[in-house]
Image (cartoon, rainbow, N blue to C red):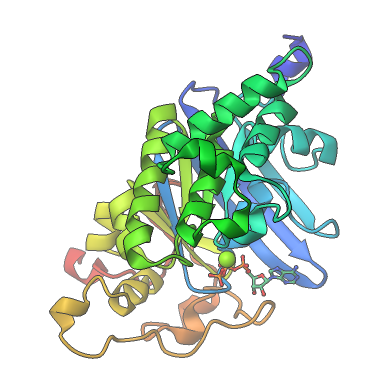
Length: 340
Ligand SMILES: Nc1ncnc2c1ncn2[C@@H]1O[C@H](COP(=O)(O)OP(=O)(O)OP(=O)(O)O)[C@@H](O)[C@H]1O
Ligand SMILES: [Mg+2]
């Protein structure tokens, strides 16, 4: 390794860190869409990313794959284990080499991720050969590996499935194929954006199980985006809560869900069906709607919808917590009454 490459490695070169995002800022046109997004994920760790529609979850995930629109202005840094350079500002050629090899993604709709005119086995084999480089696997070996992977993701008759076209499979089977493609090169990071939302409930649970087993077997890191908080509670150990393009709270799932500090997290949990059985009636909702891009208030972005907001909330709340992975940014956190 050259000295230069060594110098461009993250300073925190702890061997277990897979992803390190620092001060990620994204602007598109006149909209400032992500603000100072900072978090990290270690090997084998499963992190949930939650927040209402328009919070910036998908933009964050697209940034990790270098898939933001060409005209986006991006600053901050995104470091991935095994990649000697920052993903922010990287050339498309380098990002293409990283995608599918070091970081892979499973989107909501499997049909859009698959090529409708290509047999699914060939699609799995292709992602293997693309990244194998010169002298890598030959086509026959890649095809055999593809069938093995289709077997691993639980497709019955994987040999037959490999010869099928996407439209010949069910939605759940297609998403299994997408998971097989995502895991084909043993990525260090898997990003899932609502991977089971389009599936039947019974199929959902099986695909979730598949994802968890797939990343665990590889000791990979998982970033899991969903609106379903019960899924976060099942799948993830840590959670990041986003609102208005910012991470407003972060911590272990058990702590954040049991004792949310940010008033936004508190509202989100109250509005989720985690508590619905206990509530026994209509779910409370967070009043108002998420402002559209560019119309969030200054200071605390949540103050236009928060029942606890006072004048001080016109100023930006500082992060309260030992590190970016643990804490919240709220002037009037829940639970503070008890402490005083
Ligand atoms: N290409 C774009 N140009 C302008 N604004 C965009 C663009 N893509 C996203 N946005 C805006 O950025 C904000 C965050 O979008 P994002 O897709 O990240 O939300 P999300 O949290 O994934 O929501 P959902 O839960 O609905 O998927 C939204 O206000 C959205 O309108
Ligand atoms: Mg989204």
